[in-house]
Image (cartoon, rainbow, N blue to C red; front, side):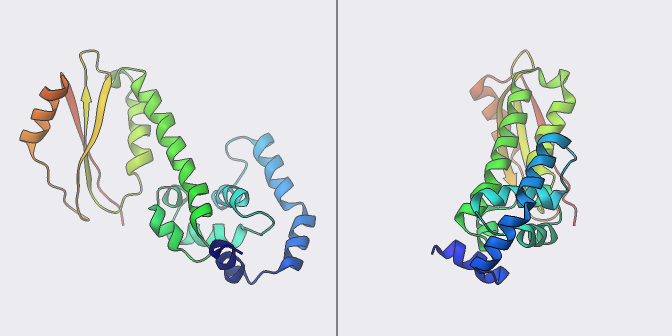
Length: 197
């Protein structure tokens, strides 16, 4: 038995009898049906996490772990944006379950990044805001990023220039300007967040 499966079994106090009872309940099938037929709001946040965990942990009730993750990280976005090492260290989690959650964050970032890269940034503010929110909404520290644009206001580079603490992050304007000149950027957008606690 893998360490991850053993941790999961221990955290839930499960055994094979529970596996059989859970499988016969049809809970997973009902969740799947609601997801496929009900649209974006068909599942509660903990059920989205539960569904993602089901692929990594077959034949086990993942609802308690999903609820524990939401309670710890505060929201669906908080769970999906959590650091991989922190996820792996959570009771009942391991490499497979952490990866099942992290791949969603990777997919979200690529989706919104593609939308931003395909349109002029100045002409698609909502896409830009969505893109930045996916990465920065749940940070607990300040982050400064520079978005470098070409002559058509298309994104050519998104660079994280500083991570700080709760209320400050330092940047060096000279380095930002030199980078813009090095890559041929004609405009830039400086972005930083205000972490909420």
